[in-house]
Length: 504
Image (cartoon, rainbow, N blue to C red; front, side):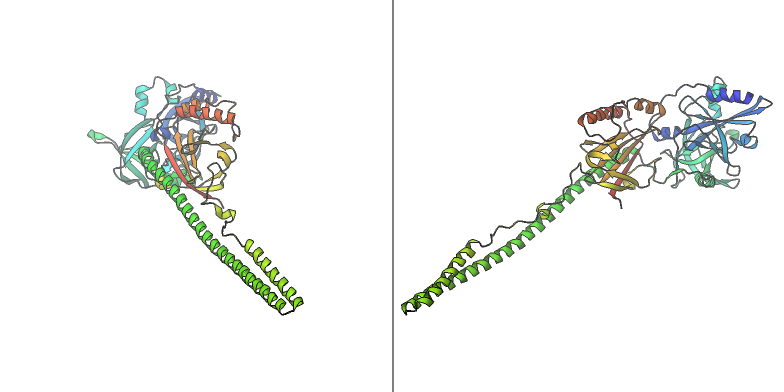
């Protein structure tokens, strides 16, 4: 009973909502960094208290060092594991579900939590690369904590910067040596690249005797991924090089302009080719019509000549007293002359026209037309991804900006746009689709919980949630979208550019 009471006090202490972090890459990763607390009980008395750091690889799964939760693994009935997020006002109880003492890694499950997962970097880490450590160093706690409650109050992690100093082997495990400042309490916290992707798990540090410099050891990414695979724990992995969002936006703006210009040039070329084919078809049709006209006129001339000769012959027969044959020959000649006149009058016209399907000068698709189901492939050279998947994404583009049969886009100068605010994710996405170039763009903002709450409160109950048909619904949606845009930071964290093609 005493354990339950103590746990309730520890995990339900109200905290102060921290000041929202900037929407930078390290701040975005910090949303998923937690403090891991262990409380040991013997005979209903607190026998020990320890804490370290950890980070979310799934909304309810935390990676930390094995030595942070060692007592909980050995004495699960006597040691409570608490997980304190970096945001909000609530802490959670966790339980160890995977433990690897050799690699010094453990996986903790938190049933009630919904934490923003971090991403692992699968690209190369070279000596001299910038690195950042996030966690809860104990020396900072000792200097700032006013009471035991400060250890279980949500608080943003401490960040420190250094460089990667190479890979080493420590007790048979591959580690990354680095110069980012860490201390006891950082154990289990992430070591990051400048884009906020995890490259290691901080685990130990060298001693600083006689003024020696200190170095940190982080369990290497290779060991971390092997541990997660063995635990059957899925994780997000990104291998794209780290580039600044300013550079990516600048380069992609030029790429957008080139893509639009290329599309316009392609349309002009297609129209020119269609016009050339049309002119060639017209020339062929004119030639055939002219030949048919000439043939008919030749037939009319022959009939006229034949009729005239027949009439002349009838006159000759009449002069010789052969009246009856003369009448028949004259009648035949007159009929030939009449036939010649009719044939001439009914001769084919020299004017020709093409079938309707050939009359257009080029393929024209209205910008508000439906394109149907498409499969969109990420363009790595135009994108910047820090935590998002780089897999192909489907898009079903309907008429008048209705995507996937449920999301209404708004038409703008640069295509159709929509700001998407999910209920279960701390990410705001500005989606844009250009039907002309078939380019689908997601600009993503990884925001702190306080900013997400403020944005969600902007939603009006009468704003349509599905695709909109009337002008009134579009106006309400436009107003809400404009208000959301005002809350977004100047720069996003990610920009994902996709090229779409019809789905088979």
